[in-house]
Structures are given as structure tokens and as C-alpha cells.
Image (cartoon, rainbow, N blue to C red):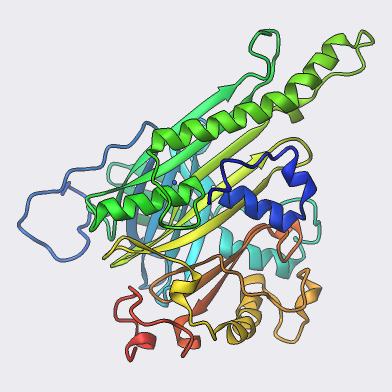
Length: 429
């Protein structure tokens, strides 16, 4: 079933409760100075993936200032062709020794030569604790902690004001990817060049490169980008996915914006003029959320703006066993009896995520008294991350909330054979 390409945001999203509407939106993507990941070999250097201009997926490794902890930053540069923003966006993550991921987001600066990254996961807890999350209608503003510049095969700059340097891994750990971009501006009325606004459709995809069971893995990633919820659906080519999504967006955008512009043209009083709220945007991107050993986790991020104060966004997540290329969804990860205990664990582990005191009721911060078990979940080497979309359990200001639960807390809840290496919590399974 495909839910992503058939929804009409201007009508469907207005008719549904916000969490369900957003769910439909998402379900309807050896040089000098570099480090070598893994064991050294005498084999020839592997070829680099060919990325579309302006985009890449890379890995960088270095020490956090003041610690002996080595971290690997998994970063993606998205094409600068997004709306009216000239600077390119950066997304990514790094993990601590327990396998807990920390989400990063940022941009390349006004000149496009920097990486200004924010610790989104840590920033949310700090904002809640400080009271900065009290305005429910405005998204949180988090200052960048990483201020970096690209210097040959490394990133140099500061982390929380302290000097840092990260070297690029070639090749990186896990699966390698080639980045693909698709961008189109859509005029609301093709025969009216006087129209000064337009809509924009964007798709950012990642194609696995020289991966084990590459064809199966690529097919299942493509299904996720297409919005398919089963692995038996036909696999369209990326170009076909793009054309299908662009056709749907064009049809819906012109149906919404065209009549409003026509009405404005007939209004002789000059009082009615369509605003920039008719500059619709729709975006679907593929993000790497974990990439190590035999485990790959990705996010299929969707954004829709079709008028109003702000757009809707969120991420549908999915893990893959790269040994087979097969998808790992909730039912592939957890035993059927796991739900009651998972609910208790989520209520426990959401507290440090949001900076909520252990004695405080969750309803003081969230829209729920207990945290429901979402099936929107992915794996890392150290645990599972449950992802809640904006409005699903909290006000818009909190954005998307990710709750990490370590494997050590989920004894007796997991199915055997998961591709998580030698994690001690799973050693007896």
C-alpha cells in the first residue's frame, strides 16, 4: 500500500487529527589526511560513490574536547535547492559508547563553507529544563554547538567553544551511499507568467553503493521512500517515484492556488492579494540514522507546507539487516508479548529525553499521561529508538521526540537473530 504519493495536504490533512494526518503524510529516500575504518588491507582503494551536485553522505571521526571518547559523525549535506534558503542543510548523528544516538541538524552558513551543527537531542532536554519550551506555538531555537569548516579531508573548528578536529573516514563504516537530488518549481497557473509565486517539490534519495545484498537493500529503501508499508510491493525506479510524486503535488497545488489567484485578479478593489502562504512546499528525504556492522537504520522525512502558520513534518523510520537486505519493522524486532513492558520503559526513558524529573507527572509536559508504544522504531547497536511525530504526544514546540531504550532494559522482549553484533545484553540470545 502506498500512502505517501496519494495524499492531498490541502484537504486530507485538514480533515484528520494532527497525529494521524502527519502519519499519512509520511507513509503515503585512501587519501592523505584521512582515517581508515576497520582493519588495514592491501587491497585497492574502493571507488567513491558519485553524488549529485550539492549533496553527500560522509563520516568523520575525532575526539570530543576534554574527553578520551572517540565519536563518529555521520553527516549528510542536502542540496541547497530548498525553498528560499540559499544555504544547504546538514543532518546527521553521532553516538556514545552505549549506542545511544544524538541527532544533529544545521546548515552550511551564509557563505556555504561552514558546518554549523546543533545537538537536537540534548537541546530539547535543556530547553524544557530552562522553560524555553513554554511557547507552544513556536519551534525551539537551539544554538549551534559545532562550528566547523571543511579543510581538505577533515573538519576543524570548535565544539561548545573548545577546539576540535575530525578526520574523514574513507571508506566509512557500514553501507556506502550515493546521494541523489530531485527538485522542481511548479507554477500555479501555466498560462499566467504574471504570477509571482510558485510551489516547490523536493526529493533527496540515498542509493546503497557496493553493499552486501545490494539489490534487495536498494529495493527496500526505495519502497520506504515511495511510502510502501510492505516489502512485496513492486519497486519503482527513483525517477518513477519522483515523477509520480511531482505529478500529485502539481495537481493538488494548482487545484488549490489557481482559483485563489484567479479570484485575486478579478478583485478590482486591490484589497485581496494572495500572500506567500500560497508558496507551497513538499519534501521527502532519506536520512541515515545508524550505519554500523550488519545494521542500517534510515529515516524517511516528510515535510508539507500548504498554507498557514507552519508546515507539518516528521520521520518514518526503518531498520535493515544488511546481511540479507531485509527490513526490520516493529514486528520483526519485538515479541508479541512485549508491549506492556515497553510502555513502562518508554515512560521511564522519555524523562531524560525531555529533562522531566522522575517524580513529575508526564502530563505536565506531554499531552498524555502514559507514553503509548509507537511502531515507528529503529535499532542501533545499543538499543531501540522510538520516534513520535510532532503533535503525537506533545505540543508543536517540542517537535519530533525520539526516545532511546537500551537493550539492557529490554530483556525478554526482543526476537532472536537481530543484526546488532556482540552487544552484551543480547549475548545469550
